Amino acid sequence: MIVESPDGHCSEADDMTDTKGLIFDIKKYAIHDGPGIRTTVFLKGCPLECWWCHNPEGRNESREIISIRKETPNGGVTKKDEEIGRLISITELMKEIEKDRVFYDQSGGGVTFSGGEPLVQIDFLAGTLEVSRKAGIATAVDTCGCAPRADFERIYDHVDIFLFDLKLMNDELHEKYTGVSNKLILENLEYLANTGNKIRLRIPMVPGITDTDENLLGILEFISPFNNIKHISLLPYNKLGEDKIRRFGLVDKLGRLTTQERDVLQGKARIFEEHGYIVKVGG
Ligand code: SF4
Image 1 (cartoon, protein in one colour):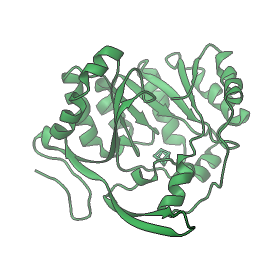
Image 2 (image 1 turned 135 degrees about the vertical axis):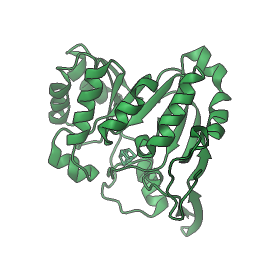
Image 3 (image 1 turned 135 degrees about the horizontal axis):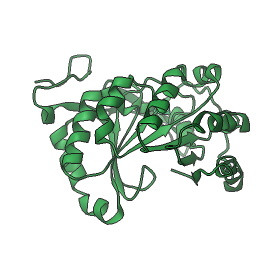
Image 4 (image 1 turned 90 degrees about the vertical axis):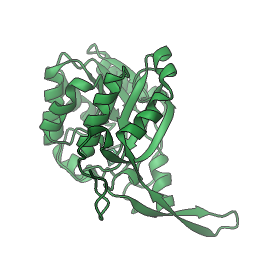
């Protein structure tokens, strides 16, 4: 049974619960990653390279060493190497997830798989989803939508909610700001929307890029034929990405942006509310 190849990639094991995945964080008591109180598991690997990514340490599919810069009070800079990525089996991960079952039961919460893009590690994700559901734990998958259709079909029955992040309708802009076309993403959104009512659409509101009226109206037009999409979250711009770009010494394509005021976001929310959608500002 496997484990990890020399280049750090994972593959399938003989016994599902021994399948290992590469994660870079587990967040307890999360309240913005689906309903109720949740445990969010962050899987490594993502096919996109969003300029505003606030989890850049989750993009690479392999374990990696990141040199973290820290500014000292006297204006100097220190660097400390940190290994990002921990191999964990489904059995080990389930022990972590089970620890907070009482909170899930009381709050209507559960486990959320995020990343990175969790479908990149489809065997590990599918196995953990199946075991979670068999254990009576509700599941959510936070996805950028960029994965083969067959992978969505494989996990569909074991997922209660898809937190589907939609960024840009204009394909040229999508390619510019994320590195990939939005074609597959839109096809998968359409597939999920036509298959059931499990979607919570999430729009990261990046000032001047994704939060423009033109983009939001384009999204409205695209989703309006799908009766199963009713819930939309507008995610205020997260400056954590800027901080990580600086600390990890990454190329900064975005520059400094200002998180929108709440009343600006509420104005954007009305674009969808006027058409009957239930809109939440925040996760
Ligand atoms: S899809 Fe998410 S994890 Fe992937 S690069 Fe974009 S913001 Fe980062």
